Image (cartoon, rainbow, N blue to C red):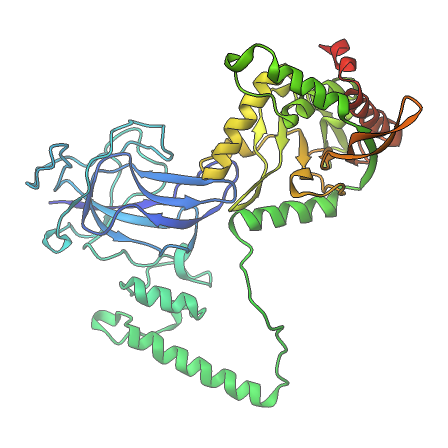
Length: 462
């Protein structure tokens, strides 16, 4: 007899509490292998393919594409012990013991290879009476595993459907009924079902919705109508929601200040051209302006470590960090993300450039891992690519500073006592005034500008 096991949305790490379903990779009736990706989700930090720790037949999916689910909510149910996926593509059923890998992200766990999608009719499956079962393998996931009585989705628990504190099952089976109730903020525990054994049917929910609408209309007749601004409403969720939360928190908690300076980047651009021209066509990848600025930042932070820090508000302490994990702002179709170059202080310009290229490509394709978007200690923001000269950057909380770089354009400039056309860039530093005063911030920015104007200055710290 097969067991129908419930797979819940796992903890994806980095403090993430929810994810949005982007694309289902399997359908009801498909045969899946252990650790086969079954759904693609978008967290506040990255796109992630979630593998299922069980092998068997998919009997139900929870949530439509575009729906946001909290960690621990049911993703799908799998009938195990009845069908084992075969790499040869055979459609004959074979008995197999239920097992799980404990895998929560692609690249970890048993690493069993995915197999070709195969369909089995769920109607032909049966399952034992409801009971709580323990995972067969020691590495099974920490989330509860539940055997259900049929291939229909399990009943809603207090954590997945109720708004009050009452515990216990709700007499509802259909996911459409649950969805309809959620859309209208209807508490299913307050309804009496008209189906067999008190089962709540769609008609019961629709009747309750109509009743609630009539009550609201009666109340509206005696109260002034609420005024709602017109226009398109865009949910603040996913990457956009995470950016909004972080920027708002930065403005609330950090007393920031900004200083800026114009710098003559003519010599820096000449040095870059010389680097890229040395050694001919086989000399390796080109050095980017962003890589040069990143290397200048690591040298400046070595001189002014106050800006490579964070503030522990509860302890009322400034924590100066031992290494530089350099974030850089990258605009993608999904919004603004900040990939992090780990241990930038220990890298050469070429190494930093190669890592920036790799992370930028991953950001554009949506394949950045959550760990590659967190843990930064200082951020470099090149908004010059948008054709603007200056800005007042908002600090990437909980960091202490961000360097903004405008476009590099020819401008009139006094060079060696004479007016000349030079390549000029505006540099802006926003810093947390709790970690240092203007003298330190000004010294940092002046050192960066000196390295831009005279790259030979950087040689002193290499």
